[in-house]
Image (cartoon, rainbow, N blue to C red):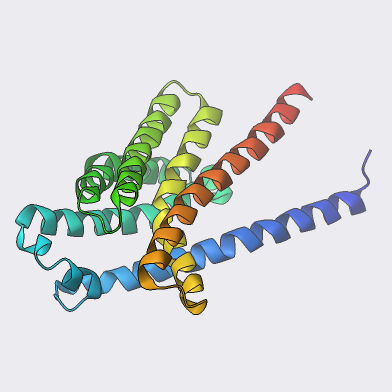
Length: 224
């Protein structure tokens, strides 16, 4: 049996590592939202828009872009509330309402526009394929999260929503890696490609690790 001092130490260590994970996640998520908001001035004086000036002449691409960045911005903020144990336990209606909104935004707005825009993504054929995969996997994992909670399979629901969130967070992690490689003097195209692949694959690996840890903890509690 563990005494109270050992339990307190274990809890402190767990909270410390949780803070190491969540503080940068929240910080960079909110930073992305802050950096995205200026796009809604609808100014054309942004490098992303200037690089794709011909595409922005097409209304369907232009509208898809603004819908997509709105969806991504909302999903990142909404998903932060979904993993709050306080909200889940003390403010469950908020969890349910935000969860339903997140699912709607991903399935109807974010993933479809992301899939359309992937056909015009910068980079090689493989980068465009990666963007297509991201959109499809984001849609699929979110749909599975919805289906599993409808049949009250809470563990599976959590696992699929972690996978969904890992795709939403690629918008954040990509920019972190891109900034890091910029300081190491990577040229722009290689920086873009490497940051994109590491972001997607890295997020998926982190998601599967978190799922493994949570499932292991759940089984221990269930079998105890």
